[in-house]
Length: 246
Image 1 (tube, one colour):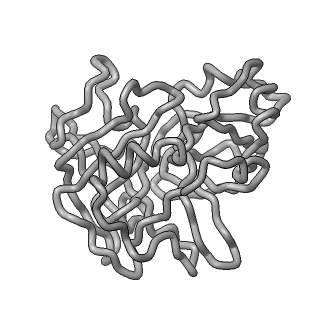
Image 2 (tube, one colour; image 1 turned 30 degrees about the horizontal axis):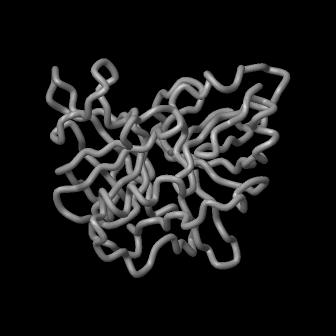
């Protein structure tokens, strides 16, 4: 989930869709669809200290004058039967070597342990999964990280590439939100990715939708309990229940 400043064309990644969102919100056809997100801003210390190791940040991030979403990453998992790769989930490029996604994308769902590094193939510069463009890039993974005690509240995973992506006019990292304040509440956001929202079945074409990030009080009312400060929620208008993003 990303927020944007339309005047400056500056984008910031603010959340990752939480696993088991249905645990918080009941699907009701008479109400807007609502989902929970883990807030990126509450995990910055972990990302910067444990993953980046205080490495220099990109000098430019999140600028996209054409609104092409240059930081979207298609994450493929190796098929142990065919040894080929199958699209599995979406991610977001936050540096030349780091991709943020859900913890569920990087963990073995049976054991809860991180998947082997050679499980992953990462592609940037894609619009259609079936038609790589001339500016598409492929990388493989050298490190797999997930937030300690990963739960729905802390559903964050990081993949580190074995070789940096080339930062070009067609491939750039997004900015990370830098504040834990409440400015995000009651604002607009955008979700993008290749998965359909309801079923998780891949779409060949990457799609995007505008959504509303609800206030903390409203989220808790819809959940029927106090939502963690590490999370926020967004609504899905009935005519836009088709897409999911990280």
